[in-house]
Length: 228
Image (cartoon, rainbow, N blue to C red; front, side, top):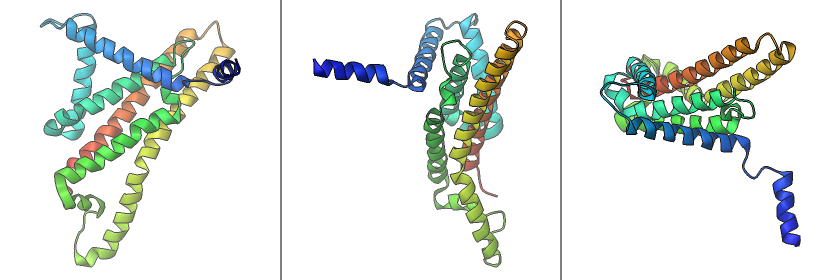
């Protein structure tokens, strides 16, 4: 009896699974289901959900090719597309009453930003070996420019360290700000601006997913390109 009461208190007084975790899992399940539906209904003449998803995938692939190059775009595309779709779905879930955007929690964003940070340097070292250090030394590399090279190394090193922080905080801050802004607008004009509020929410959700995806592509592309 005592153990049952203790378990009941735990379930009532606290969240067993935080909202941002359960909604992130739900977003993942949605993406998996959509992928299976598209795969099951593949046809040479796309229609319906296949047509919609092909448009999104082609747009993301074009973004990768423009910022990374044709060769590396195919290698990084699965990671970049997964991040883009996951963030977009999470952002849109925040527009549904009763749901919250997992991307409005800093833990979710850090869980994406840190692997991207690690992948950037892992691929950079894998492609260039010790030559990857040239990315941190600036455009002039000779004995006479040694002080400048040291300064550039410190600046670039700090800049790379803060990348996961900026990715995390930028998405977190914008999604939280969007949530409060939409709440205030809805309270001020609940009868006259619902459509405008929804359009604003969709716009912010798309832009933030695009910014995170674009920066991811730029970071990965910069790691594998030749240092000049």
